[in-house]
Length: 177
Image (tube, rainbow, N blue to C red; front, side, top):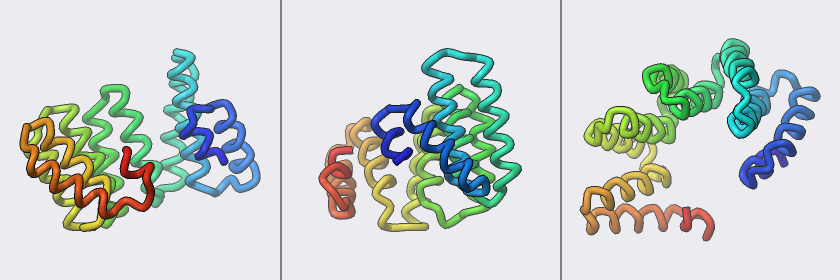
């Protein structure tokens, strides 16, 4: 339920649900880190710098508490990239990939972050292609490569990539994203 609230941008409700889960199951890594993420988003919205610092410490605590949870590293990397702390974000993507080198989405997210940070399109494409080497059914990789090809005006290649993404889509909502 908390995940749905996050998707609907109903952050207070999401946070309340995550707090219930963490209280019932304090060793549930996904709930703990998602709670941190909901708190981060709320701190951003309210522009509460003190709360933001506290949440960043909670992210660090989550990583220490759950060192094998790739979601902890991945969300920390996304939060750091959001704050323009790209070098630190990249380090967390590297750590996540050491824990889960078979996770194709991590390569895609890291590639997008590198594109945003350094504008290095070749490195970004190489990482996204690496995601496809790991999982040739990675919908996110095809969508992201398709978007990059549209921006590069390689429209035929973009159409090919989007067609592959559509074939892998499981719902209409996935096809719209």
